[in-house]
Length: 67
Image (cartoon, rainbow, N blue to C red; front, side, top):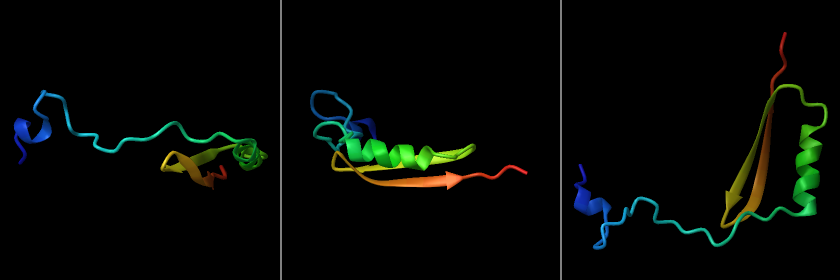
C-alpha cells in the first residue's frame, strides 16, 4: 500500500492525476450533427462520448426497448 509520500510531490500536492489534457474536446458541427442523429427516435437509452487526446473519437448508442 502506498504511503502519503508516494502520492504527493515535494510541495505536498496530490500526484494522483498525472495525465494532462491540452484543451477541451472538439465540438464541431459534424460532431453535433452525429450526436443529433443518434438522438433521433430514441426514447430510452444512453449515448457515450469517447474522448482521446482532447478529440471526440467515438460515440456509442445503447437503446433500451421497454415492454
